[in-house]
Image (tube, rainbow, N blue to C red; front, top):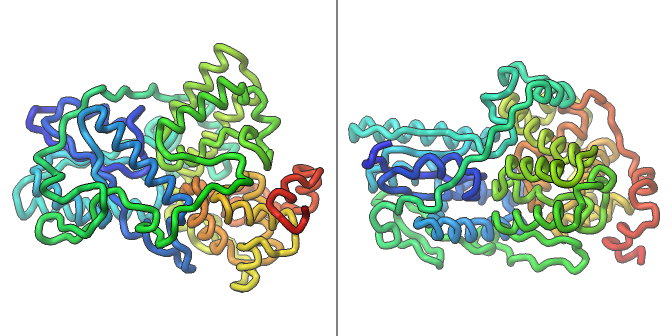
Length: 462
């Protein structure tokens, strides 16, 4: 790296400063522009008309961006947030500030891959017209395992999770975390003055050609809905940002010693402590999977190593598995027939779907879970498996309706985990038990024997 290197970091789902490969790599640059781009796809609607980013996730995302900005300011930089197409915004910034390098995290979704492809083409055109080339650097920041360390090529990745897990555990490699310097290069020029960046979002223009909106938006600006208030029945309320993520991990593992019994409590439905509740922070990259892994290993050294400590790492491997699966199968993850190309007699019945969505199916266990997600943006893993099975197998409805609704509602939405889990649960994914079906009555007897969970969310049962 030379003193004339001028870098841009394009933040996506890597919204943190710790264990961040790009931030660690640019310390010797002349200048650094940190940009989070909110693309139109994030603000639009799904194929079946659901808002892509609902109010729960929007609030969490905004809080995350605000904290990332504070963390970057503490290191001598700041975060610039812009709504627009990456292929429009980044080349204009490259031209304005004569940038030499672009850093961005690799992402598993097809739309995310298209954004990178379009940006690469746009930068090639910029190079042809100006004679200045811009280097692009992809980095891996969302997974526990680095893609280069897998014991197989992605095309030969085992289809079944158990085979994937055994293969990677046989040659276990988790890289050490990288250190972010306490001081970062400053932004180039004066982007505040040049682009009208400020605390209040407003229409602006980058250069002379690209219409965008600068600044961290409000929930209303993103969703056209008011910011949701915490539901008094919710046992846990997420707050965005890496500080909140680290505090939760510290409290759950060390103060409450909850990791010791995680395997026994993980199928819980009520309360804040039956699971780590790290999923939302992991989904936007506010906490590094490697940071979680290192804390588990430290807990094993200092307190206890048992099935529960292994199980949290096991769950991180599930995240990795779906991430790599999404990269491997591409558009098949979102197809009606799924990765296995299975034809099912699903139907489209909006009235039946709306009864499922609003928690009015007549099955109190399903209805309680659906009312919880509507009120809080969250549902337990046990609940998600049950409502997915009920939608696709009991109601015989197209599973993509449910997956898209979850995409809109979940505070912890993650493209690979959401669609991977849905295809797995409804029999078109990689589950070796193709006819898996959850009997909600038996599930309620086992996991909510006294009915406390159902009474919490169903007023008619109180």
